[in-house]
Length: 63
Image (cartoon, rainbow, N blue to C red):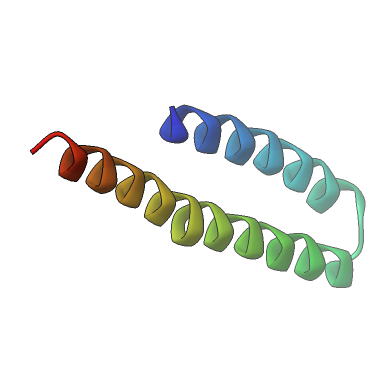
């Protein structure tokens, strides 16, 4: 579930960033790339850890 949500958000963010890079100046390209990096770091770093901890805690309760 988390993987599907992350994939949808990243695809949407990539499309928006691609449109910005085609239309805007280099400084805007840098800002768009920085925004994508922050979104990616959030999704991979935080949401993945939440998913792992959720699975771990659920498996601990069944033993």
